[in-house]
Structures are given as C-alpha cells and as structure tokens.
Length: 286
Image (cartoon, rainbow, N blue to C red):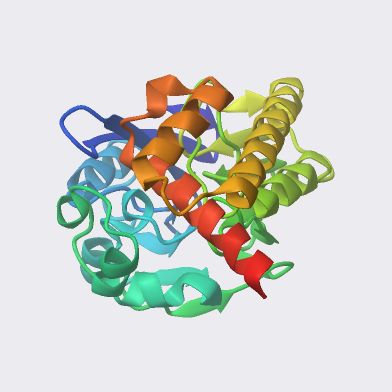
C-alpha cells in the first residue's frame, strides 16, 4: 500500500501458534538509486517483497539497505536471504547485535513458539547504529535514529526527515492488542520520548495502521496509560510473590487484575510479564 510518493507499506502475515495469528508491516522507501527496507519481515517473505518492489518500480532497481528496528523474528526473519540476493547493507543496533548475528542464542534466551519457521537464520550487520545517529541512504533520504528500548533491549525508531515520518517498529503498543515488552519502565520512557518528537506528520508502526499526528499522539497517550498500569501491578506482584505460588497462578491473577484475561494463553505476553517481574525482583535483591 502506498503511504506517500516515497514510502509503501507491505503487510506480512504469520502464525506464532495455530491459535495466535500475527502480522507485521515492512516499510519500503523508494529512492532514485533503489529501495530501502525498514525491517525484513519473516522467513520466506523476501519473494513477496521482491514482487512488490518490481510491481511499483523498475525491475532493474535493487534493495540497497535493510534497516532493522530490533532483533525479533518477525523483523529479521528474511534479512539473511535479502542480503544474499541483493548484496545490501544491513543496519542494526549494538545492543541486539548478538540476537541478530546468532539467532540460536536468541532462541535459547527467548524461546518463542515457531521460532525457526519465522527466522531463516543469522545475518551479519554491516553498520552499527545508535541513538541520534543520522543515516543518509542517498541524497534526499535521511533517517534520524532514536533509541526506543522497552519492547526489546535496544529497539530503534527512525525519523524520515524529508517526509516527516516516524517508523516506530513495535515501540508503540496498540491499546486493543496484546502488550509485548522487555521492560515496562523503559517502554514508558520511550513512549514519552516519541510523543515529544518534533514535527511528525505520520507515525508508522510495524503492527498497526499508519497514524496521522493527532491519531499518533492519542495512541501514544493510551499506550502510556496501559503500560503504567501494567508496570504498577507487575511491581506489586514482584513485591508480594510468595514461594508457594506457581508462576501460572501468579500470571493468571495478574491478568485478572489487569482485566486482560483474554491474553492468559498468549505465550509472548506471558514471557513479557515474567521477564518484568524477574527484573524487578532482581533489582530488589541488590
């Protein structure tokens, strides 16, 4: 789908489990010298991406770069094949380089269902990028890098100056979707930072529709409220955890208190809550 003259959005659907169906958006920036991808989607979708860019442009044009928002499977899954086919430059952050360049390590540390069906394999980063870096992909296409940790260890967002578009990856959770995060406190900080980010005409998340400025700021406000509530209740459970309580019991009670019983069977939300409680309890013990 065309967002503006230089940006297209491509929807990629996939299954985490047979019951948990997801999708992710890959953004395609159209340049005079070729194409530039924000994330790569899941394993196997390189064909869909290739067909799409050939449909919208000159078949002889190529993908010059893949800029990764973070290391999760639905964002790096096809990067290995795309790099091999197009000999393109792959950009990513130092904080998640290990999970990008060693996907088996990622699976060991975050063993989500269907992992190997979503990720083809590791991809080596050609350029490490960090907060406040400026990336000139070609004359007239400049991206400002913004640290957006919270959903993952070192998620990145990218501000496309010429179009006043902000590619946010998974940093802005949708209020009616399952919250997935690594650190609720960092997520809140990121949301506040993105909400105060200069002149943004369009917010472009990876798992929701594109927002105009008003919609984007409203969605960020809702996300902050949701994450603050999650953070507060998670902290209460970290404080009151009793050894005789099983993890499943704690998680069910927490979902009830959050009024999020619909996510009790969601493995990624369960992982997020467990990770946050473990982090909080570890901090208490220091």
